[in-house]
Length: 348
Image 1 (tube, rainbow, N blue to C red):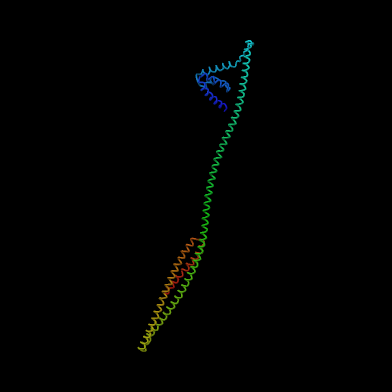
Image 2 (image 1 turned 120 degrees about the vertical axis):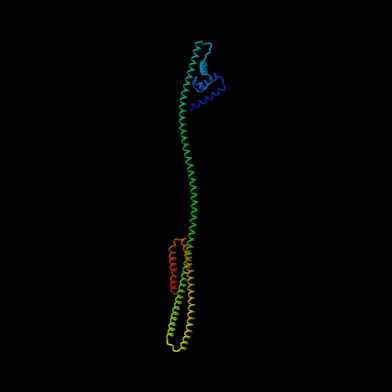
């Protein structure tokens, strides 16, 4: 990573040198100085051409040769002293140059070792940084997963809260409906009880009235039958007397005529009595018809009560047995007029 940063920095500085030194040789010379003294890199013709890319391939070689020549001239120390002989001056200058070159080589060696240590430290830091980056990426992924799970959990919680709210609303509505049903059931029970009591009382009244009507009809029928039988017996007796009178020997015509007139008068009276009895019989018959009409009205009333009973039965199935017993009793009562009609038909 450090080499990459230095490379970028080197390229940026070379771009600045391009603007400062437009001449090709000057630019190559400055790039050689930059590489050797600032970055500690030994310049080569290929390296210079890769960085500068200006001029021909001989331009970086010429510039590199001039750079080394100038560097050697500058590294040579000149000893100027009037008392020293020339060979000693040269030897002293070479010694100083050798010392300077040796120091420079040592410096380059230290710089190289320092660069090795630095590169190892940079590599370790890069490794640690990569590890931290990977850890951060893993943590970021975990964070994203946790965020997604949290979002799903929050959404699920929201849905559950909405469902719970809807369920509570439905529960409240059902509780109100159950309360209304209980109230309606209680009112229906009270109404059913009242209707049952009213029906029972009305049924007892109708039964009592029916019993009284039957008793009156039975008494009237018995009385009418007795009157009719008595009149029939009396009429038969009169007929026998007439026949006896007709068959008896005539004692005298006047007496027979008188007797006949008397008998005729008696017959007239008897006929009047028979007419009166027939009128009474017709009145009894009319009373019987009226009783039939009353019985028919009672039967219609019984049917209406049966319809009411059916309505009450549809509201409460628990009263089915009791209502069935009442209906059976009503059917038993309703069959009695049929036998009376038969007796009346026989009597007629």
